Image (cartoon, rainbow, N blue to C red; front, top):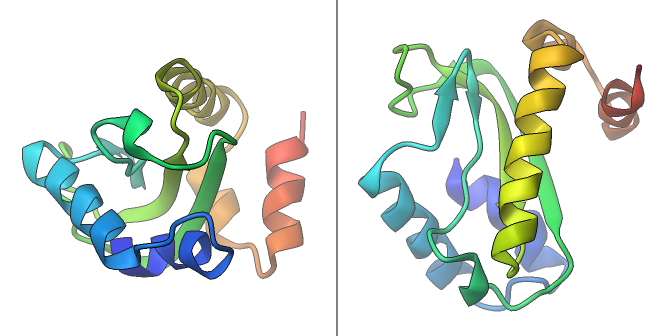
Length: 127
């Protein structure tokens, strides 16, 4: 999952060493899962300042069948928000905003019914 989720970062040149980046993601997951429960995870590396790009990027992944991701509630993860930034403050703000957004605006099932990236953007922009 982490390899597939981080592939757009590599394909666009944001990440230059894909294997090393995935290894850092795995190291972070081995410490404690980035799954929040409720079928959601926010993978990221432990030390954001190790990332090369200063521009924050979020890769959204949807796995309709779900995947075991060591969630605290034991549920399979279906919605992933991979966070990439080299600024720790931006990193924490992104995590906070995603948490708040998911609590207040969206039912996870809304994401599981989308068919295109444009549909995902519509969900993110809805009031």
